[in-house]
Length: 470
Image 1 (tube, rainbow, N blue to C red):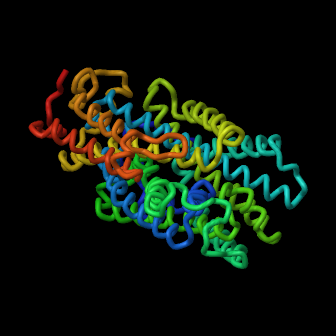
Image 2 (cartoon, rainbow, N blue to C red; image 1 turned 90 degrees about the vertical axis):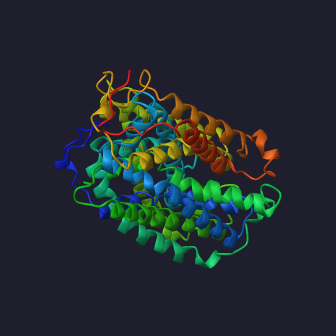
Image 3 (cartoon, helix red, strand yellow; image 1 turned 120 degrees about the horizontal axis):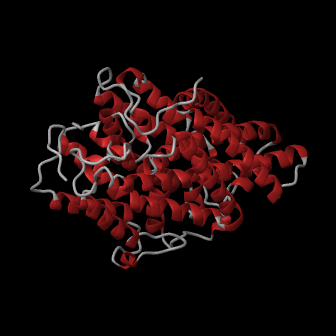
């Protein structure tokens, strides 16, 4: 299979051979990994029992999908990734906002996947072979996983799609075995070492779980969905089919692993840590399947994230090839794995990361969706590539390549979102006005959308036939 040559340039019609069924496969298979499973552990680690954990995850995921899935239609129309497509609203240089947000999202989730996957693999090998469960073993496993991940990311979309189709079957079987493996120790009560509700009372803690564990899953894809739908032809597949396929892929791909994470966290009494108790509670016969699940799932998920990182870095630095950008991104992500493993608390780092990035990414997604609705899905694909050609002009040039109104709207939403966030490492000043409940997702999106709508109320949407403005 040849290495993919495409970066963030427009995919020609003859190469757009994927189908809505492929979207389901890649969103399901790539998410059946410990990097997603671990988010199901967060609600129990916050002090919630079975049913509060399940309702928080399901509610947050459904709300997140309703918000995120329509973004898949943008790249269906433009033939390029979402951060580049956002140049229609932010300007061909202003689209760097989306590239940076996407890069940070992918970086964090890649590091998290390699981190938790490597820890479980070392723990399983320690019980199977007596391998020392120490820093050297973990460092070696992180390196092996990172190297395998690079291969998939460099070869690109076609290989990752094939891997996802295989993983969607294999990982479902391994998780089904896991349900049987942990059934004897399962309990509906929160782990005893959590010390009660993390935020002191039920509802603030439940909302935190809904955002950190449920909503964060779909929001992680706000810049990723276009990486796959750009390979789907709008001439052969309608928007409705693509939208429903995206919803189905996200729903199954996120709920199945996260609910498995909740189930195993409760069975393993995993309150303050997940990887260690998960391995310790596993019956001996499940250690090999657990090792395989940790390895295969991590490579599949991190490979897809690293592929997206390469695209976003390629978009930021057009002179760099996608392959070179992917290698650089892999090195940075591996560095974050070591920081996460040896310097940070898992729960605090995960929760803080997803909440802060949700606050930054949500207003960008809202502005992009408003722009899609206003232009009726009509884009000038060639004009979106101006920055990549290191040229000037085009219908999305705006002012020096930036749409100041869209950028200001995103910034306003992001500032309000960061001021309303509640994490173990940082609490925003607006929490005093929201009763301590984290409403950063709602407020950041609402403020960003309202400001953008107000600033552009008298502005005609930029369509393909519009004149260039310098």
